[in-house]
Length: 149
Image (cartoon, rainbow, N blue to C red; front, side):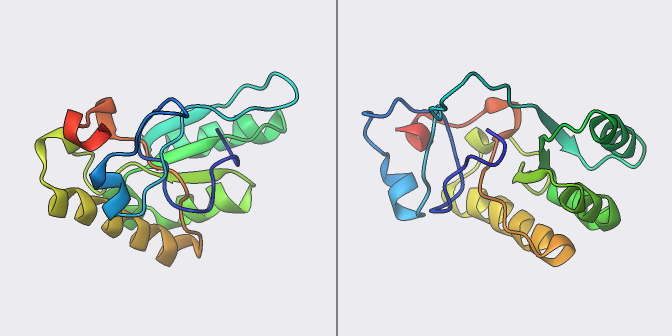
């Protein structure tokens, strides 16, 4: 949910509030969230896989014209290639989330590789925008059963 992620760590996967937190999440300080209660119904708009050199600026123009905010789940390699677009996302009041360095299927990676994908992306987002992402969306929604508990 745009702007609603807890500052305790990145959102890693969906989980019901009473589900046990898996050892992987505990070991890496990851908070998992499925929903955020709000006093009224809200819609969270999210966009994945950018920043794209032409599509993201067009999306930002459309959102700006309508005074809407969204969360952009960005790929680290794309942020490295287009840091100005990442800065624009933040400057216009949107949230950036982590979508891994190379859009890898996390289910096929070991713990060290998963953390490298996440950490490398967080670092490039920080360098480009001076912002730390508070949420992560696994590419393809692919995480292993062990990773989600």
